Image (tube, rainbow, N blue to C red):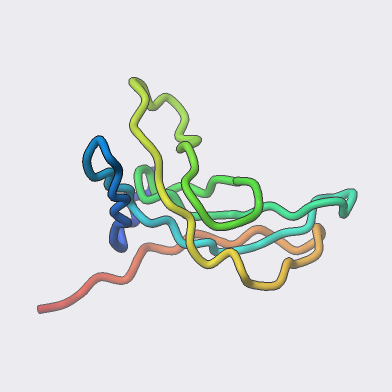
Length: 102
């Protein structure tokens, strides 16, 4: 069953050519690579709701959504300062996002 997008907000970059708006993707897990020489991030994609892996550190990244064409822009990773878990740690299980009740 496909997951729904997980939209929590956006970051606006002011540039000389106008504003660039990127959705925010929260880091759910920071992991050590199997050989331990670097860390990478696991995020829940704000575009498709699936898990994606990205290089370590906050900032803009290109989506890794399968089958997304044409290019859909970028998103901004936040929360990359958490300690890295060992490579043997299980990946997080996706749960439905919380929803606000009016």
